[in-house]
Each structure stands twice: as structure tokens, then as C-alpha cells.
Length: 318
Picture (spheres, helix red, strand yellow):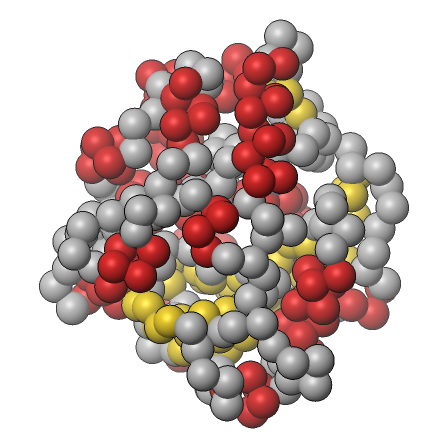
């Protein structure tokens, strides 16, 4: 039977860090809708058991690069192929909705817009004590910072890119000057977006901001603030034409999300990581091998492969 709403997440732990496993189990424990998880392990050594998701999809192979959107696309294809749900919430496996009724609010907004950011605010929690497992315990923890989602910030009158935003003040100089958090969780109505896939060519991360800018028809602004090589820009524009029809905007569900700690924010280098790709004249159509379930680098990309791998190791957030 088709569910009205399912959650889709990805799990991978290439450096074998216990915190990532623990965060996943806290996330899973507090999710009150069916869950589809795509687990990736390059070497085929998987960590999750069948009971750790309502539907577990395992993918092996590929290279050390940002695989998140590639894996989510595999999950979306599986959900469509098996008619598992009408609507899908894409969510990071370190995010927990803080209040009951969140899914009903998401579903209500999807009636108005086929693409909805599922939260208005996110509380970034500090490292948790071992016993903090349930929502009540998590919600009682004083957050390190609390920031708006990008849809919420724009609903309050902020520009898409805003150097004076709370996010920039909290994270500068490690972040591009956007108005709010673009990623973490977004929902879509499958029948309204039949050809939709996430953009998987941002191999150092940042695909969430690409999605928001494309959904709003504002890729020119995105490229102004995030200098990308010409081939990379062309690939993003081709994806947007193929996968995103004209939308009435980006919807917003008024929910609060708790973000589970997995390393210092500064180490993620959000504002600088795209220079890695620019400096290598990155072109996904030339530099990536899309033939498998997980992405690989094409031959002749040793410099790019080394730079991307070094960045992912340097993040320090596992």
C-alpha cells in the first residue's frame, strides 16, 4: 500500500566513526514516519542492520567524494519504482524534528507547492551525553546556535544571498553569505515532479544550495556568489532544465529541527570548498563516471581526486 509520506536518508561512514553511527540511531529512534535508507560502503562492509530502516538499500563501490545526492537519487528511483509513497521527505540522518505534528504540516504545504523546506528553524546541539536519546531529552539541551531555514528567512523579507544574515554572523568566514540554512531537509510531491532528481555533481557538497537557487530561478545569483568553472555551471544549468519545471516558489513548513553534533562547524569550510573544484577546472561531464550506482572519478583526474579526498578528510566531522 502506498504511504502518504516517507522519509528518505543516506548513511555512509567511510572513516568508521562511532558518533556517526550513534547519531543515525538517535535519528531513527525519533522518526515517526516510514524510513527508506540508502547505505553506501565502498568496500561492501555495511554497518546498518535490516531493522535500522523500513527499507534498506545497500550500495557499494565508487570513490571518496560527496555521494549524498547520488545516493538520494537511487532512493528516489526505488521509491518510485515500488510506488512506496505519494510524498517524500529528504532528511539528513542527524536531524530530529522537535515537535509532534511536523509531518502533517509538511503534507499540508505540499498541497500548495511541490517542493517544501520542512522546517523554519534549526537548533544546533552541542555534543550530547550518552543518555540523551529521546526528543524530550534532546529538546532540553541548550543549543550552540539557532538559525532560520532559507525559506523562512526569505519569507521574512531577506534576500536569497544576505551577508548580514544570522547564519553569516554565526559561521563567518566559513559560509557563503546566504540568508539561511538551505539543506538538512526538504520534501517533494512525486507526481508533481515526475522527472525530478537532485543535482549530484557537487562532489564537495553544496548541492542543497544549488537546488534552492534553481527552484527559485536564480542560478545567476548563485554563480555570482559561488564561482564555479564554466563546465560545472553548464552542467548545473542542464540539470535544472531537465529536472525542475517552473515552480510557484519554495514552500515552507513551520517546524523546528534539532541538529545532532558531528564536529566543529568551522572544519566544513562551506565558503571555501568550491574553490577546490574551480581551481581544477572541474567539469562533471568530463571528470565523473556515472556508470555505477555510486560515482567514480574518470581517468586522468588524479589531481582533482586527491584534492577532494583531502578536503573530506580535513572536515573532521566524519
